[in-house]
Amino acid sequence: QVQLQESGPGLVKPSETLSLTCTVSGGSISSSTYYWGWIRQPPGKGLEWIGSISYSGITYYNPSLKSRVTISVDTSKNQFSLKLSSVTAADTAVYYCARHDMTTEDLDYWGQGTLVTVSS
Amino acid sequence: QSALTQPPSASGSPGQSVTISCTGTSSDVGGYNYVSWYQQHPGKAPKVMIYEVSKRPSGVPDRFSGSKSGNTASLTVSGLQAEDEADYYCSSYAGSNNFVFGTGTKVTVL
Image 1 (cartoon, each protein chain N blue to C red):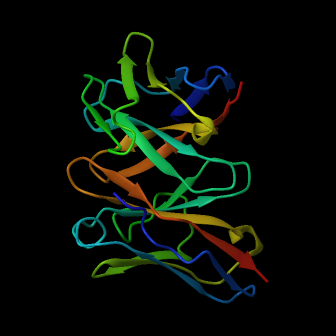
Image 2 (image 1 turned 180 degrees about the vertical axis):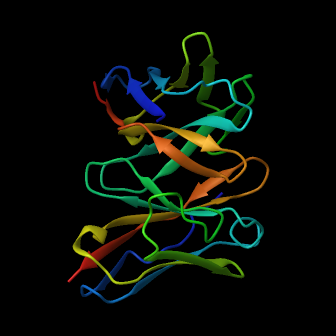
Image 3 (image 1 turned 120 degrees about the vertical axis):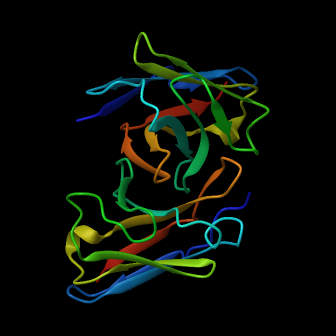
């Protein structure tokens, strides 16, 4: 059973860079069938896809966030990471990592989510 | 890309059926058979209930069904149960390696 777990600071100052890591267990991140994605959900609001990455480092980003987002992968640690630069209060959200099945275009395994608050 | 449009709320009594719509465009919902539906209980991560418009992952009750007509996809929950009370989100592949979610629908079991 694949499990994903987000980790990183819960509080980030405005204008700084948000950094999160997702650790995958119960399966290898090195599969051509799957990408690995980040999704966020502001408090009381809906889901927003941030982007996804393959094990080889091919990335796809939400056009509305592309200029501020970097997703990377470390296959040796079975982890992938998110960096979001120049954050504002509008970036306060629960951030989820998930497995993105590229053959069916669905997100079939999710982490529990981690709340990141942007505040000084 | 814009979020797919869902009604904010839907409701039904136990045992009844409820249908949620998800309206996009020919560039997302209408252009691909890659519509998924997610159930999210308060404080929990979303769970995929339907993928590729109408397919159910293993373990999802057959009370959940999906369909699509043109630019609108639908999720129907038949035989409503108390545990079906949750938020539901649709998603669609949107071409050019983009992915978009719906605005979300809160389902209440009366």
